Length: 167
Image 1: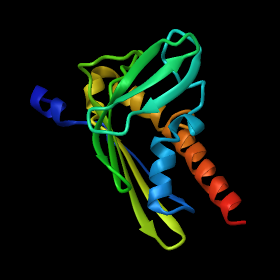
Image 2: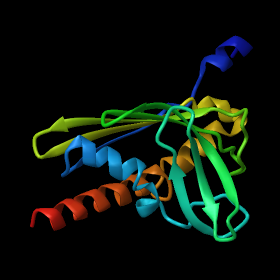
Image 3: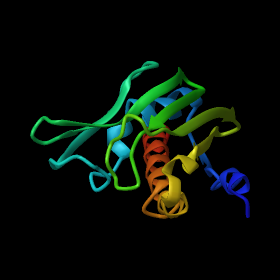
């Protein structure tokens, strides 16, 4: 294989499709403003014990965690903020689970109204930017401990809250 050909091989993005029983406005709100309510404390990279996580609601906003000691640890930033339809986040976490402002992988979430709720299209892309560890990282973020399980937690929260509002 030539060097040029090797550079064109990229890991496929991680794509997920899910349905939640809420309108797009609510689905978007739970994903963003409610992020800390569904994101598990086990999934943090800061030195301090996890307290909460935040997606700031604007282009250029930060995506970060706060430790129980008040420290913050960056995860990335907001690239697109289009409530209630679309969100794009820069995921700047390395294959060593450290923040690197120079790394860019992207997480895009699209919320589309449909009968009975919202279709949520999720994509984590630009995985080739992890270099030699791209395939290993793709496997990790596509696992039950990665986006598969995380998005399940998100959907469960949205659906539970909707059922409580409309029993």
